[in-house]
Amino acid sequence: MNKELLTPEELTALKEATADYGAATNYWRLKIQLCFISAFSLMVFIGFYPDLVISWLKLTDAPDLDALYTLLETRAVTIFVLIVAGYFSYRYLPNVKVPLGIIVSIVAMNIFLDIPVYYTAKMAIGEWDLSILVVVRCTLLYFLISLYLTADYLPAAPRKLFVYPFRRDGYSGKDR
Image (cartoon, rainbow, N blue to C red; front, top):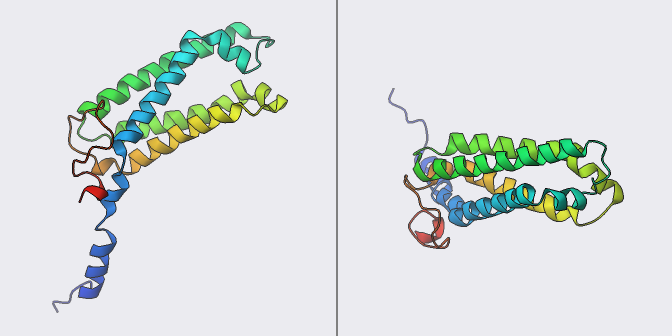
């Protein structure tokens, strides 16, 4: 009783369905570079200009203003640690899926925990410019999730970060 599990037509259909899965890694360098750029710019604004951030968020009259400065300082240090850990993980680890998953969970948690702490005063006024920050942070989260889902198809370590993001090297579906 030597019976095949799948028919030849089913095997052909499976092969065709998964043949271009590497196309999911298109623009992976650009996604990584945009993640680092947006995280670094958020860190710079939060770390070096906390007065500007607090006044922009309309929290200048908050009763616990000293606590807000401490929270922003802690957030800037956290973002810096995530940038450094993300860089070394991306550059040298053969399997970036685990550290990338940790970074995705931290970024997602920070986005949702910032809503009641930082954004309530700005949302109560109804100013539109908060949407810019929300879009940047959600785009960062989207890129990180996209990279996490395709981490198995990234090239082997060591990987370079500061290279032309549209370079064709055989790791995207359009290069084949």
